[in-house]
Length: 68
Image (tube, rainbow, N blue to C red; front, side, top):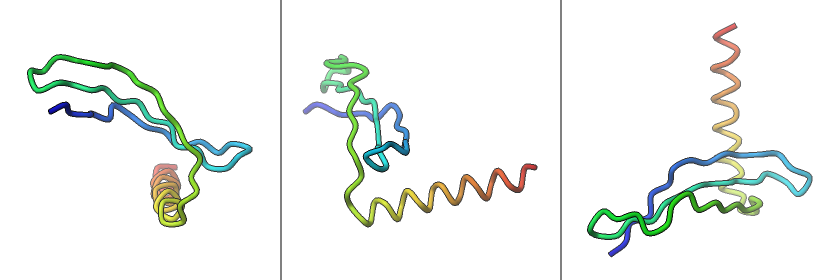
């Protein structure tokens, strides 16, 4: 069975709304990389996900304000 590994993701404010972009690789059961650095993105439509993103942004903003 293949394994999908998320290598990174980002959240961006765009004209369409909050966009999540992510990069992943697919690895087979023997450890061979089948696909590498596959990029995908979507506009956030789910309210629960929007709330979770807002929580992450608030966490980062709070962290930044303490470091000043």
